[in-house]
Image (tube, rainbow, N blue to C red; front, side, top):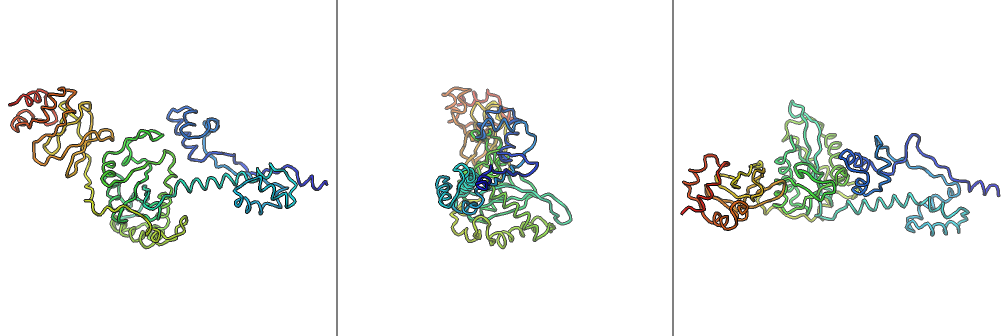
Length: 438
């Protein structure tokens, strides 16, 4: 009897020395600190992050994140049944009541609560794994993930920092990598185009980590996003949907981040860091993608990316004329609301007078953006010294009738030249003269 009572003594709790139990991840902790710096209150922070206000208060003034050191519960009564429980709990979906009855039939003399406490952390871990799998695994042709990495190499006799563009197909895990000397919008789009050609198509959506080449600004919850107009035009041209990671949740695009780590470790481990030129580096990166990265057995899918790619359902892009990469054309909207492009004049909504807009031309149209939003689109004028006016753009100045008349009349070329020494500074009297001109 004494031995039985001793065997049912309270369990011993063993934890790693010097570590405090933290119930939030490093991402959560970083997000709390960032929102605190931005002036958010504790309750607002809790609502944004989807955690309890009590948790936010607990870590609000902490200086640094410390990983959670799991406590090991040594249950003396359950010790003989530990291996059985670890195997059986998966089979019965972690139902403590079923496990308790099983143990009773095997001679277990402890309480039900001890069985429940034993399986609790295992159930939570299994739930986390399942949620992660559902959230991040995407079907064929659904999603690509894109990111930049940086490293240093020697090109010829110069040591330089290079940017590594990486695009990973979410389903097959095939990767395209290209080295660049900068991360501007032109280089960003060029790398995309090379990846499209390499894979022979694109996925439905692309996931990014809020770079300025994609997103000029956004709120934390992602309800108000100001897209980079050049990139948004590029995405619409090819018909894919850009997605953004939630701030401080870069692990959402873990496939491409793992891919960049793999490039740095494997590629540079094989080829070293000395290359004749940037072209030499990119040639070897392409060979590595085909011969090494595509042929390895991937740690998550347990298949070769090249084999899995056969089931990847990409949208073909070969029939489209390659997107023309041009520098952004910036204009300040003058008081007459006509911005100039290649000697022709295009109207802009009257509320944007004095504002900065970006012009993005293509062979058929001229798109005009303000703060990342498309505000108007005109047919491209191929002749010179012509105008394209939308009546609604001028109503705030002239009223509906005169604005409509102005849009229908083609101004005499001599009158334009007479009145416009500086095409960006024209007096509104010109419009009155144009409207009444016979």
